[in-house]
Image (cartoon, rainbow, N blue to C red; front, side):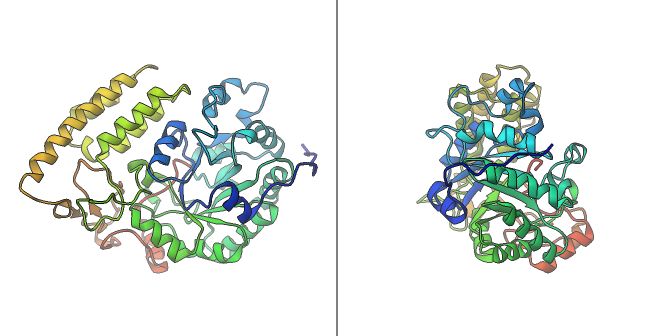
Length: 424
């Protein structure tokens, strides 16, 4: 279906004018994550340093009339005047997946007054994206991608942006990024992984592709991949030259990922904040409880399993209780579990620290990755074990891959550290 474009909108800001004047020059960005970057999580994230958030991916086909009412209430609920509001939820970019320009435009028009930009998902590598013909499975259809971006660029009152994965060739990745820019994308987010890098084959993101994209285009560029600790953010900014760094899974396990270590921190080696995870869980649940906008129970449970992951393997009764909770009004049950976790973690911390030890004394190194493991009562990143420990990429601290590291990881099929979208 052909889409009639118009050019009668008031002039909207573009590129760096948009990045600076509307978004406020964000460097710390929460990625779009299905059922995980919902309103309550975005509010928590902003408290701990996130400067820009994306919604979970919304399916433009399902969001379009005539049968979209129930899906809209679940995917982007503006009826309570909280989601997308200037007091609770900005700056905000709403992400859609789509393969039909007309449907995409219809859906984007319905939310443009509640956000600062519309993003197109060109990165999802999951089987559902293959079946639905969207995300990274559009990577070879440049004409269609151009039309998806351009119809929004020409018809919306807010800018359009795009998040994409890389090709094996740096040259093709750069050509792809320049095409997205020419179609009208005003910010590009480069996830430095191939479409095939997912699940146990996630491996390392390639920052050299991201750097090449940044050097080739004129619009702002965000980097996505390999962000586990606070210092990784500055390293990524420095090594790639990008304007901002986006985190997905790393930020889910530590929503304070973007926050610097507080003054008087008990650690001299950690540059970022690692609050007690039970405190973060309780803070998140308080947000969920106080919002008028419903939060899906699957999202809440998913967050709690990730936030409290360092201790759930030890506190197996709490893990089992958390897994058994069912129903639509279960927040109080979640709160009771988080309170119990808090008591146990405070007990453990007091027992260990009474000998005069400091946090630095308790940090260990995971042998197959070389990454730091913090005491189990603190929030911290999760990383998947490597398939082949004998050929592991070992590091003294955080995963900052060289081009050779990336090639070795891909060739060996390793699944080193992971900061992949869920499942974008």
